[in-house]
Every structure is written in C-alpha cells, then in structure tokens.
Length: 405
Image 1 (cartoon, rainbow, N blue to C red):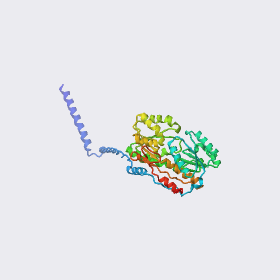
Image 2: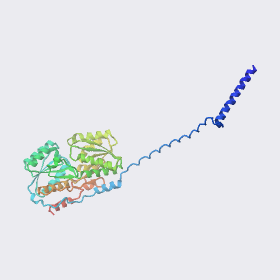
Image 3: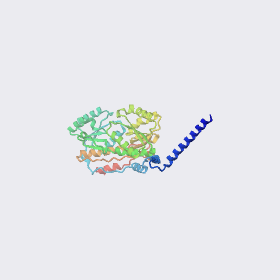
Image 4: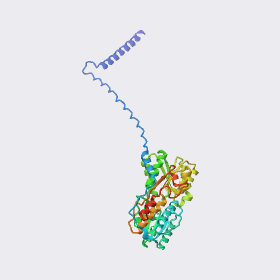
C-alpha cells in the first residue's frame, strides 16, 4: 500500500516541475528561434477625458438705469412751446363751421380736447358744433349725416378711426367738406391707403414715445422686476401700436420684466372692465403693475385691483383730472403721463386754421407730454385742474403764431 502512495507523490512533483518549466519558458522566451514570439505588452489604457467644466451662470442683463432715469427726468419737465409751422393769419375764417364728432362724449380725454378746440377756434369766431354720443359707431354715422346736412366746412373725427365709417367720410368728401382725423393715430403710424385717400390732414399723438417713457418709469420703480398687465381696447385706432411700443421697450430695456394683456372694448368699460382686471389679477397674483393704456380705464382698473386684493400699482397715460386726483390721494395710481389735453385742442385748432386757409397741413403738430408722479403731481393743483402743470407757453406761442400778439 505504500508504493502507490509514493507513485502518486512522484507524479504530482513531476507535474509541478513541468508546469514551472512552462511558466519559466513562457516568461523568458528561451533561445529557440522556432519558439512563438511573446505577445506585445498591453498598451496603457487611454486616460479618461476630464469632465467638461460646468458653464458659468449667465450674468443677468440689468437695465441701464442711468439712461432710463435721464429719459424720465426729461419728460418730467414743464414743456416748452415749439412752433409746428410758419405763422398764419386766421382772421378771415370768421363764420366757418367746424363739426366735431368725439369717439365718446363723456370721456375726459375728449372733453378737455374739445374745451381747448372751442377756446382756440373762438378767438377767430369760427362756429363749433359738438355731436354728443356714447361711443357707438352707429351714432358716429348719424353725426356724419348731420354734419353733411349742416353744410359744415370741416369735420373733426376726434379719436375716431375713419376706417370705421369710410362710406360717410366719402359722402362728406363728395359734399366738399374737409376731414381732420385728430388724436386718433400715433406719430409714425402708417395709415391704411383707403383712409389716406379721404382724410385731408391729421393731428397725431406722440403715443409711442409716451408709452416708452412710461415703461422706463416702471422699470426704475420696480428695479427691473415688473410683471405688467396691459389693459387695452383693440378697436381704438392707436391701441395695438401703443401695446407694441410698450412690449418693445420692455424687451429692449428689461428682459426680465414680463407683460400680459387684457382687451376691454370701449363700450364695455363701465360694465365688464372691473371684472376683466380682477380676474386677471386673481389668475396671476404676481402681477405688480396694471398699465391701462388710456387713463380713463383707471376708473375700472383700480376697483379691479381692490376687488382682487392685489398690491398692484397703476401706471397710465393721459393725465385726466380724476386720475391725477387718485395719484394724489391713494397708493394705487403711482404715475400718469399727460399731454395737456386743452393744449392738444389748441394744436388741433392750428391744423384746422391751416386747412381752412388752404395752406399745407403740418406734421407733426405741437404736442408734448409730461410725466406726473408723487414728486410733481401737486403742480397740477390740489385738487388737479385741467391745463395746469404744463405751463402756459403754448397759449402765448400759438397766439403769436396766429398774429394775435
């Protein structure tokens, strides 16, 4: 029994020795040319690429507050008179008949313009008829028919887009009546050809400039964090251009500011306006400014803000007396930019005189706006008074231009 055990041990030893020999031969390669070449050592692995660095967060684009403040400050100054054209003598126009059709008789905007128009035309005994209406286009048509029947010399479409009543405008032209489209287009707006063919002259408003400066004021006041609800009335001629000017200025000067819009047609201001504003504020409580593009809308925008329990502020344009008083008395209306609407009426009268005299109309007429906020609103009076806060340079300026001084 011992011999088989030794044999197994011997075989195991021989196997171990043979295995070691193979390992040594493989490791050294040996001197035999017929031996297979040793495999090439494995190449070092490629180092793993380093991870790309995390991009640096973009620096926020901050508004240029110095530029914006300079533009706002300039528009807060009392306007200086700038003659719109050469001197004229309207003294021969006594007895001429001017028929005024406002977009809405109860609108403070039109009330004050008509006040200035009547005042200036009265200096030369021009007869003025004002057609009362509630903003219904059917009523504007009736007003045109009445103006034609009265054989007026001039029809003033005050803040009415002539495109809404083109057949009646054509009828007036056929009757030999001149047409002035007053305060219904913004300066720089391209009018439709069918309107340009029939309208004899315009007095355009610097609405886009006023919109841009109102935006600048809002950017400064919000320190670049404005979320603005723009309240518009799309059927009113200048509205879409004004809204575009607002949005363009925000995009250019405050990329982090946001805007949204709600459309309230003129005929719905009294009945639906408050609800539209209130619903928008409830839907988005982060809205911190409401911008009615015509300050007459503030009459429903402010109750809408209160009803929503919002802290939003109102910035707007036109400087109607009741809105300036709100600016003085509460913390909701914080800025209103006005055109001196009585002075606008004088500018309209200047264009009427030139047309009735057969002179070339001027473009643009003299209209300059002024920003009012807490720093200067008391210059309009306490309580505010129309035609106050703008100085009286336009009165002496036009009188001198018309040969009265």
